[in-house]
Image (cartoon, rainbow, N blue to C red; front, side, top):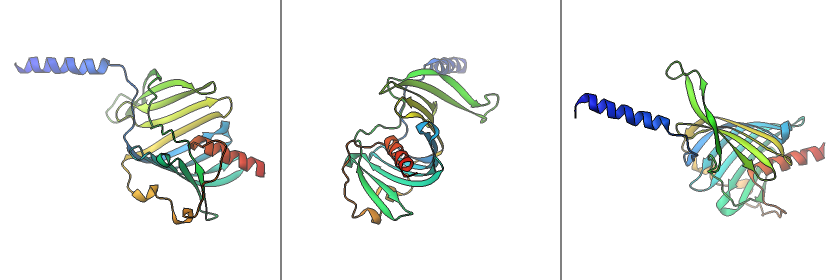
Amino acid sequence: MNMVSVLSCLTLVLAAAAAQEPRPCVVPPLMSGGFTVMAASGLVMSSGDISYDALGQRMRVRNVGLIGNQTFTLDQLLIFNQNVYYEIDWMRASCKKLPLDSTFIPMQVPPDAKLVGQAFLGSSSSWGSSLLVNTWQGALAQNGQYTVVFTEIGCIPVTFNGFTPASGWTTISTFNWVLGNTDPMEYVPPPICANAKLEESETAHTFFTALESLAMKTIEEE
């Protein structure tokens, strides 16, 4: 096979790959990054960092933000395979141990999501000045809906927008992702949690309902 034939075959392969429609994907199993959140239709605004371990089904989320006109800090350690999460308040040196919804949902484009389209963030006119992303949409429980944006290469999450009549709008933007976790102690409860006993709750929390619960408590205290 001569060089022209090789190049022709390569061109056909690349063209076929480019013509394939994007498919739902799952993010790398170990990641760390930053995020901003606007939840409860703007009532809660925060930013922080997250460590994500899909292999061990664990997350560590640190938040600093505003609820109404009050500031808050929230450090959450979510351990799905133990059905618990720790709510750590370093300002008060306190720790709560609460039931966690054991359903671990990995960071991913849901398999039943519908592709909205592809777009370049930035400019596609020169190398390195753009990011190719896919936008997906789908339905949530309780008559809700969502839109998510993931990168085409690497399946890195960019933004999430969700709405339910009960919770309102939630918007999450992420940035500065790196692959891997640098500190394994991120997923070990700190010493102030050593004597924390599991509190009873009518329903087990998720990351989102924990933020909503904190918002409601703050409103009641005002």
